[in-house]
Image 1: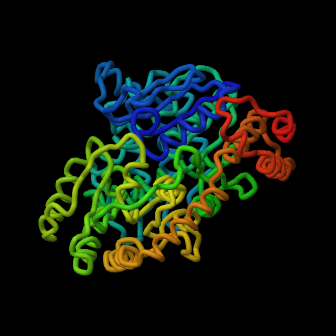
Image 2: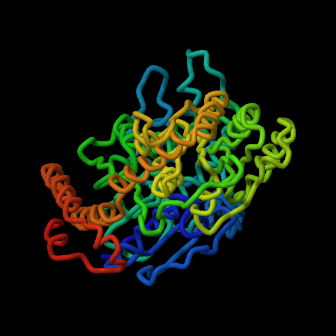
Image 3: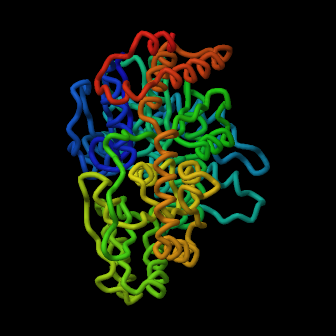
Length: 518
């Protein structure tokens, strides 16, 4: 089977949890060929060694600098064509309906389908931005009439349209003909899948690692945009995400937390099947010993979603009880996050932590970072099912984590395999870290239980067997009446996946495993 794997800002242009997941998927399904298409900002080159079953890789610059290839006159004429103008008006009127009416998702879908058919030029070749400004302003005026909500200025409408234009431009991204599309996130990657699905009927599987809509809410909340701009952008994003859900053969979120969001947003419950992340146990054997100095480690990118400011503030509380403690932060600072890193450096100084906090930079794998700490900390405000936690558990390290996304599905809600604290609560995080740093017996017992849970729950063989079945079923399309059969096939695949199979890298499926997918 030939599969298009669609990403946004992840594999193979950066390292990280989603990229690790993609690499595992491709390597462990060697019988399938993959064409990888990744929407990017500034990074366009692969930083991974791509497996031999990757037929092609394309980086598509969605948010980077755009080279205008058409004259402004030609662009204006294109943007004012009756089909495009009508589609934009239909789309915005459906997304921002007249006051007192509900969003018309069916009309929004129809508008998107027209735009998908009309975009004839390569990605971003023809956008100066703001083509839908007039349509947006008309819809907004009707949407807020008599409500007391503020008006949308022309400059604000143009800002929204520039973002939306780039978003919608992915409808016409081209890649080779394939048997199945697998999008690793909703939003632009989901929309990119939708454009192809509408043109030739290729079925879509969607895996959300973090719920795209939720993470956009969090990002825009922190952005320096007027309320009107945030409102309009989120209205469009929500409509697009819901439209993608409605056209997927299967949705395979990595956690029940994500699955709940998808169902709440209108995804058909029968088509949502949770497939947890997994790791290769042989790559993460139990760690031996502990550091000489009480140490908290973190591994992940330096990013606002990881909320490292709260972790640093929590560590200041740790130092009050454990004066010789250290905090070691492992991970790269992605392009665009330099200002955030500078804020963290300033916070370390302001908290008087000096050399007790160190930024260690990128590491080749999570294991050195896990070994470096007595405890591994995760302070995120949003997660799917984080590899950091699963890998730490597999290594037998105790963890302290914010209770977001599917984190409690990793460690268990009883906290016997890892502690949970509320997000953005430095006091609770600091106290939990102190508890484990000073109690050797509890910390080490928790680490042993964590490894046992990881071995039983996050098995790479089950992950691989499930996706082998999902691909085979989805490529043939799945009628509503057959969805229960798909679930039974996945259960059969789980039971037939053995440790021997997990260790047999690049082995073909056994007869039993292949039969369970038919």
